[in-house]
Image 1 (cartoon, each protein chain N blue to C red):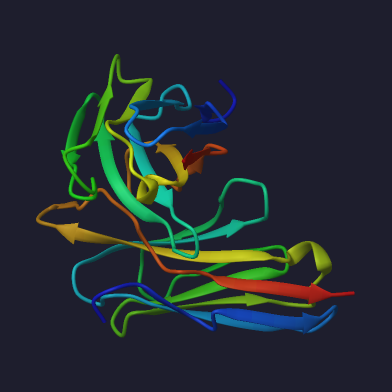
Image 2 (tube, rainbow over the protein chains, first blue to last red):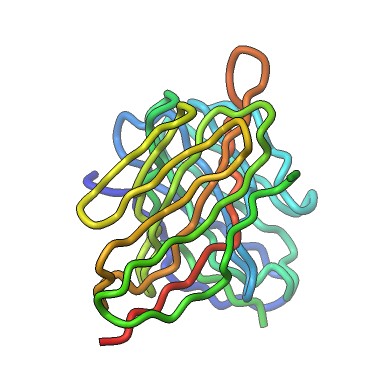
Length: 114
Length: 116
């Protein structure tokens, strides 16, 4: 597609439920990144994919968070047993591999856990 | 400097004023420094990717410089316009061996408000 697509754009869920957030990167972008922004905070790194593998998962806050990428394309971020502190805007970005390339961000998923 | 730090946190200027922001980052293991503009209700948009010490980049009225030895970058906006109002983020990518760490670490951003 022309840009990075994320769905849903908004999600309200009850505490304890599982949620899946989807990211469809720009075709040809081999690198994919998940970030989140909690209220009043900066962009927090979650996980980085190169192709289908995740060399760096160091930002995932707990084992309730997992992510996968299939076909070197679409990625899904899953949060199990959601907690109120998971409420945030979850941003996905993709880029070409290489030092000089910037990231293209999606419009984000606003997750609210009630 | 262990993290990416930006100053000031926020800035209010009049239309036509020129302004600049600072980004500090770890000077060891440098790989790349990015600047993004994030307007309200939109996605962050890449402005510059800088990789070499002494790099200077320019896009219209916006320019940036990079000093990797001392770990800082400046973003300049000449003749600010109301449409420049946004949060400006810098982000650092570190070196790991012969490659890079893969991830960008973002600063908290500088929020610019330009009054007509």
